[in-house]
Image 1 (tube, rainbow, N blue to C red):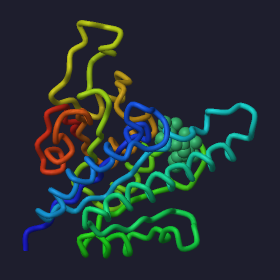
Image 2: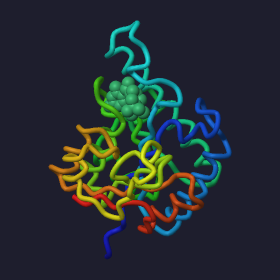
Image 3: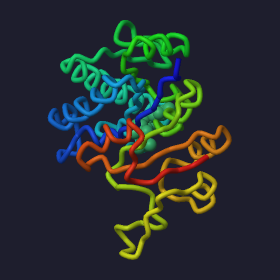
Image 4: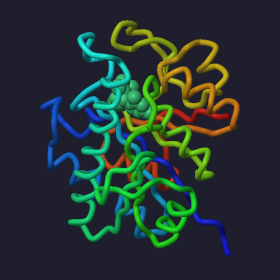
Length: 234
Ligand code: UDP
């Protein structure tokens, strides 16, 4: 039997908030659900990691201890996954949320075996709570889980439509890459994912693809292997 395509999709927390920049925008999340369902119905195995920036970032506050601030950030990603998972269910998709720490009955404790089983059952799997450790990010979380789960590729849905050689907001002559190696991303410190996550991709040969979240059907296209943004090869 042909091996099923398995992809990890990373959404930033802000992506869920739409124009409001904080909390949830139901219409935005419903459109993400519609697009993911198109791929799931075609047999693509989809796992999702969501950031927490629509609620909280560990570095948001200097008033409290950083590990505690990071715990709030990790819990923000759990809230995001519960919301998105429930919206997905309204469209008929089956879902499962895994966390690296116990959240009572809200989520299941992550294990590769349990996540593999859920994906094999056609469920969309959410990896919430990042790595479970402070000083990390959902960038490192998504790379870690992609490597562990032997995903084919990590898809990064971003506000920007690909990887550029410099910041297009500051440099009108910035050039977008169709393809770039992860080594170049590391050497030139290109803004794709944070440095720790980039190095993990490089060492474990995990490819990425970056595309614009706001382009019509970009998530559905990316899940099916059609990338209009940038391929980051490993
Ligand atoms: N976070 C963490 N460890 C992880 C993942 C996330 O401590 O493994 C915390 C951290 O405080 C972070 C917040 O959760 O700021 C939200 O995650 P996200 O990746 O969206 O944050 P960003 O990289 O934008 O700070």
